[in-house]
Length: 292
Image 1: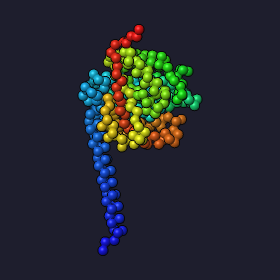
Image 2 (image 1 turned 180 degrees about the vertical axis):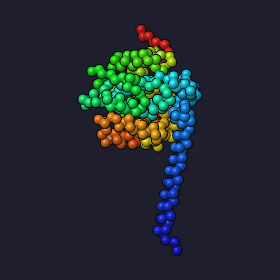
Image 3 (image 1 turned 30 degrees about the horizontal axis):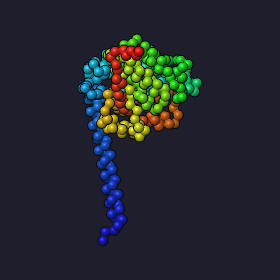
Image 4 (image 1 turned 90 degrees about the vertical axis):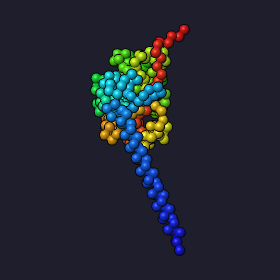
C-alpha cells in the first residue's frame, strides 16, 4: 500500500526540481546573451548599435568597430546623479572604448538647497565613470530649477544644448526619451528640446541623437534578469555591463551621498538601468526647416 503522503513528497520534489532546472536554464540563457552582446561591441566591451538598414557595427552610424576614439559623445541630463542612476552602462562602455564623453547637466539639483554639495558629488561620480572634470558642465539658471512641477522652456534649453554640440563637434548625443525614465518633467523637457532641434534641422548632419528608453516598472526592477527582454526588443543602441563595471556604477552612485535615502539604495540593487541601457534614435532632419 502506497501512502498518500508519499505522493505529496514526490510531487513537491518534482516541482522543486522543475523550478531549479528552469532557473538554471535561465541563468545559462543570461550568460549566452551577455557573451553574444559582449562579442558585438567594439573591443569586446558589450555594447552594440543596431537599427533598420544598418549592421551592428558601432556608433555613430558612420563609424566602424575600431574608430570609437573618434566618437565625441554628449550626455545631456537634468540633475546630478542622473548620469549614474540611468546612463552608467552607456557611459562606462563609451569611456572604456576611448570615446570622448562630455556631460551637460542643466541644473545643480538645488531642490532641497543642496546645489553646491550636489555639484561636488557629480564631479566625484563622473571621475569614477571616466568623465574628467573639465568635460563636465553644470548650468546654473534660475529658470532651470530642479523641480518636478517646473516646465523648462525649449527656447532656453535648446540653445544651451545646441551650443555644446557645435562647440565640441559632438557626433553622438545621449539623453532621456519622452517618458523621462522616471516621468520627471525636467527629464522630459530635455527630450522635447532635442526633438525640436532634430525636427527643425539644427542638429549637424554627422550627429546622431539617441534617447534612453523608458520601460515598465516591472521590467525596471528585474535587475540583470531583464536582459533577455532587452535583447529581443528592437533598439538603436544598447549596452550591458558585467560585475566589475557594475561595481563602478555603484561606486559612482555612492558619491551622491546627499541622495542616498533607503529607496535609492534598493534602486542600486534592483534597477535594470544599473546594468542595461537601450536607446532609440531620434530622427534628425538634414536641412533647416523654415516656417512661414
